[in-house]
Image (cartoon, rainbow, N blue to C red; front, side):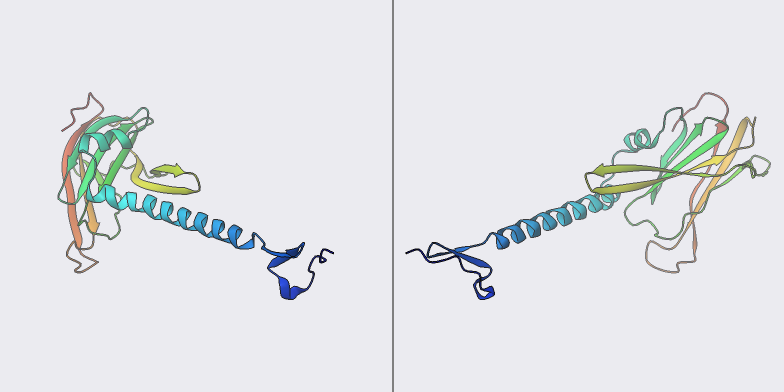
Length: 198
């Protein structure tokens, strides 16, 4: 006569059916969940590592400038310094798009808004309008990486002519005084006519 199904808790996680002891699929489900979690962690680590990789082996300056440009942006200036890629665009509605990307060995301190003046030293930033962040988001399912490209800076409406842009950052590539100011860029460019990228 067949033996009855086991109901005692001492038999779990197995089940006794028709005289044979069969393992329940609890462990298999647990293993699948663990593998899935490990896979997601690996993908997340690789995706986050993309930002580091792009700093160590970035695209060419021209390709990077194309990547950060938004519709309606006119390239005014681009350069590679010892620590950064920098691109300046004339954006719609009298705004300047200042984009920068740290390269390997760049200072890790704060990056304030650049000083923007005319040739006489008068501030060209419009204090009555807000600045806006420029960033791109790359999505891969549940994992995302945000590239902080720079900011949109409002310029005094109607300005045309030559402007000076000075961009400093804080910190030291050698890990020295984090309060030290480091000059990254000091350049002049024309504003309000056809661009002449470098």
